[in-house]
Image (tube, rainbow, N blue to C red; front, side, top):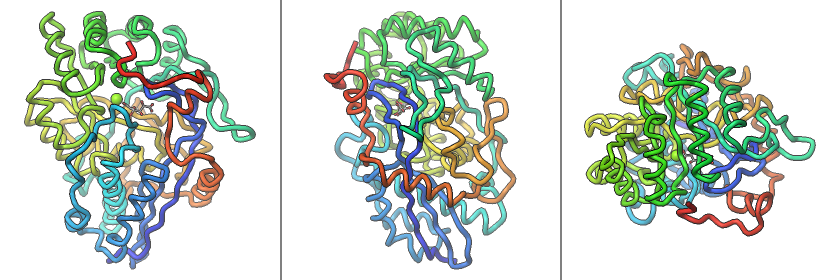
Length: 433
Ligand code: GKR
Ligand code: MG
């Protein structure tokens, strides 16, 4: 069996005006759908970050994948080469999916998922059962809350209903969370912070705790918007609320900043773990982060960490070092949802509910036959179908591709969106508080 066709579909997906310390989300998020077909007529699908950077990396790997045996993933990795280990691989300044230093890893990850989908279909087994079998039958996800402006994403005739309304206060955030928890059944909660004054974000977490109680672990992630002092202040203020399975994610920039926050928190008896998907983005970062005690929970991602098997490796490494492991998310469609769910189910040490932006996308944008992936009690249940357990609706892919072609932008630029829609003078300043 050989791969006989490699087809890339850049797509645009409606996205509400949600905020983070990077700025504001555009009305459309960019993603890429990859379809590989074999000489036996088996199709494997995958999803990657979007825009021109991802497309260029996929075009570059294409000659190595065409004609390849989909079982020979190690050979592809060795031929494609490890990414360069120099330069800033962090996500301090660049959002995930826009740092060119991991573009090769992301392209490999996309191909790996499609090959596993093919192999699963060839041997009639779900992907999770190819990778050691299920450590759990269902992948738990968390309610991923965002401060947001009014609007549901998309533009003009293509605008979406604003399901969650404007959320720029603790009270409206509690309402957003109730809606999400009621609908999806999530059992853990993540607040994207770094948007409003730290005191307002502290109050938001307090109100979430008051509403949902200790049974719902809480995390807050300001994407490095805070100084070491502010991070320590928030950590101390939220000592109780972030305990019991919660964490403080990327409060301050850089490995040194995180290590200093940790030292100062421990010195005043606050043991809340620090998590990261900004300072720690590749296997090379894990041991240094552990040595410095800068990070206690690493956020994996089957896309930029290099695939499902790379996340298994990361999970095992974290377990050996006594670190926790969780999962990061960007905007994504159902293909990625299933890649993430299979990854979680084959990574035994992943004890935290994974992040997902999925609630922020709508039925109208799903590319799967049968519509959106369903959640049961906040979890995605492993399908018994072969491969990833999904089928692409190619008419829908074509519609989303057509929409991509008409968009005036080819990369994610949250700062530009912020200047265009919220504050013409906005710049990303770290630390902001
Ligand atoms: O979508 O704005 C966003 C998030 O801030 C995303 O880009 C982050 O990478 O969700 C991510 C995170 O956990 O840092
Ligand atoms: Mg994060």
